[in-house]
Image (tube, rainbow, N blue to C red; front, side, top):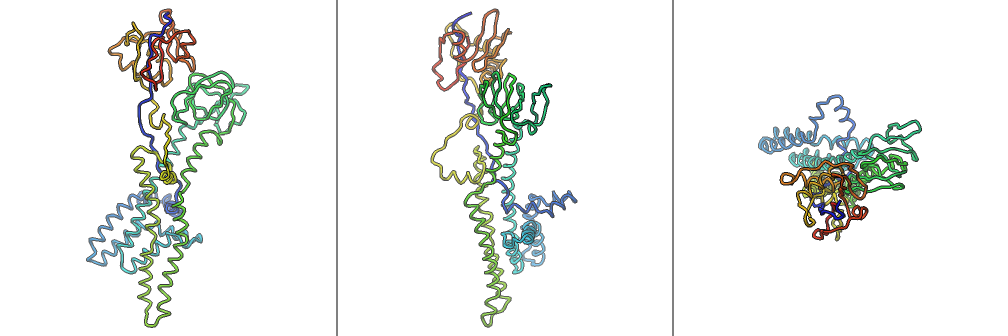
Amino acid sequence: MSREPLSHAHAHDHSHSHSHCLPGDGACCSSCETHEIALLDKLSIRYPWLLNLTSTRVRLVLGALLFIGGLLLKPYPFPSFLVFLTGYLIVGAGVIMQAFVSMTRGKFFSEHFLMSVATIGAFIIGEYAEGFAVMFLYLIGEELEHRAVDRTRRSIDALNEIRPLVAHLEEENGVRDLSPAKIRIGDTILVYPGERVPLDGRLLDGEGSLDYSALTGESRPVKVQEGTEVMAGAINGSGLLRLSVLRDEENSAVMRIMHLAEEAGQKKTPVEMFTERFSRIYTPIVVFMAIAIALIPPLALPGQDFQTWIYRALSFLVISCPCALVISVPLAYIAGIGNASKRGVYVRGSQYMEAMTRLDTVVFDKTGTLTTGRFDIVGVSIAPGVREEELLALAASLEQHSTHPVAEAVTRYAVRTRDKGAPLFALDKVTEIAGHGMTAELDGQMLLAGNRKLMDRFGIGIVNPGTGFPSATAVHIG
């Protein structure tokens, strides 16, 4: 066997992609509550076809058609009124019902109440299009906000994919499969090769490697040995792991990540909280001012009639409707988050979008964020007297037996160039040494593929270090 390495290949994580972020403003705000009215829920259970008929998209389409129809029929007052009224009831029913529900719960001066009073007032004074438009624009904003919320929920639900459903509990009489929720702190569990770790634990004996890419984005396996703490959600490599459970399921790494994601989505920005506080003060002031406009002048001033001042009070309500207030803030954040998503930037909530306005430095986690975490060969350095085709065939013959990302990169590169190279070799006594590399025998000689530690372990000097790729990971073949 030659005591010098034949050569080495360089693997580098250079496949770039963008992490996509799921936009969302978190939990539904008060403007989203119209879809949670108990009455509609009961009706939808009894009459399932109502779910399609009352969906926001259907209402938006019908509302747009009826709004255009009402404008076209303006020369004909009564038909125009009927069309606008029908459309108003279709797009504004949710707001009116939510105002009614809020009143039954003691919340009289909600934005839904003011919008309902203002738009009904618009119809009373003959401004049908304005009353309809307020409800229609509000429904558009509500639909955009629901889409953002749904994306956030889907991103949180996706975390369930890394949450194992079964834990192998080691007992005196053998191994029993249980739900992770039934495992107690201090129990011993087994994690077989290729399985996800169900609970946080400490390795009791031996050693192995774990893939934490689902939690950290880093695809390179992490070597673990006796006493090492292991997080739930990681994928076990090629060996059997015995773990002593440190935390129950509710406090495991996966559940903590899910809780953090949910809490982040529920946080609101200072601007959003200000608009909510402002609306609680603004709405009653506007209502009482409208009442004052309708009553005080006719009672206090001679020659003033109630009809004129009631008309003016209703006009004041229409002008003071907080539609812009309740739509503009969430729409601004949703538009920003959506545009960022289209450009490959994942913003988890509106509070982080606002925080970005104060940034002066950005620090990125490279693997899994700016890159895909998929390694590839960027160059091959060959020792004198060695053909590249033979080197790649030897490397792939050995690395194909490993699931390590760098080994997979070597195998993929060899397969791509195989049509112009030698076929793969049949090897004996293939062994993987964690944290070092692979060994095998070929025609009685030992074949090695791994890092410098593996070469030093077998006393093989590095002839050609391949300094042309300083940022790459070197795989030595000897």
